[in-house]
Length: 400
Image (cartoon, rainbow, N blue to C red):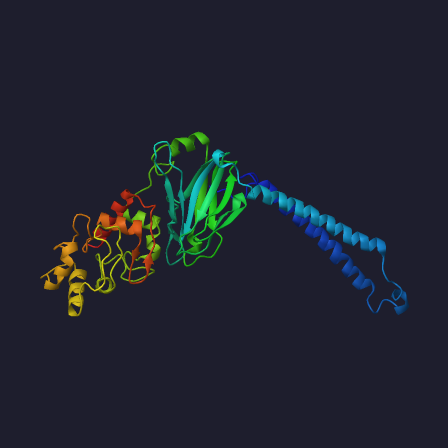
């Protein structure tokens, strides 16, 4: 059960709420004290109700002028005091040595969290994309959406400092926790900081408050506040979450890390990136790589230069590779076999496989990013080796 607007959910909630309520009360008082007399005098001194000689000698009233100047000034200073006090609490960072510092990355369309190393040297890396609900044509929810690993786990009554950023090639996001009255922009290439101390156990929604593209409305996460002993037991373990390891089926991992936002899995169509339904490479992709070269991708062979084949050989090689390397191998493939092997399966991790989504290929692409014919795929350093293996098995099984 998510807790929305508890008054004591985090340290500075009460201060901000008090400032808001005072602002609301003063606004109502000012509205009544200004609009009330204005309407009254407009009615009392309407043209049809007074004679000119009754009002022409009214010049000013010192007492009234002092009153309507002094009272709003006092109210303004009261509002300033409460606003400044709550902002000071919000913006004064606690001592780092007495706090837990967690890195937050916002990217289309997910939140990721990286904790400091525990006693075993293990670093918890959580977060990912929200799994969308499945809805039929009549609007009935067939399957509820799930958070998966997309949650930030913190201990109760502990200062938490967030260091937040976004990839350089991403857009601005905003980390918004309504229950904590906390919102901070997450800017590409910059580190913004925010802190909180959760005072009540529970689960609290995290939303993106800055429109960031197609799946902005699905950029959910949550903060889960745990008892200190339960948090410490999990933090010093190698478990994915306090509830145990997250499911690692290939389909779940692809959804969890937002792959399906950019890649079609069961359709031959381009979204942000190419479809993964085809075998390893389409003809168009092969042609693009031969003509334009390819990034290093972390392989020992280094970057592939452009123009390894020319003329009709480009089309011949592309057709052969995209067809799963079946039938008679064209002589022109010798230009590829030197690095990728005669069977196209790569050579001892030196160069990527051309026929399957092997673990080395996926690990290198996710770790280093990849230049493609559509654009540059960013790095995904949070994907674990176990998840890479699950993705490779799933894609190769799906595309058999």
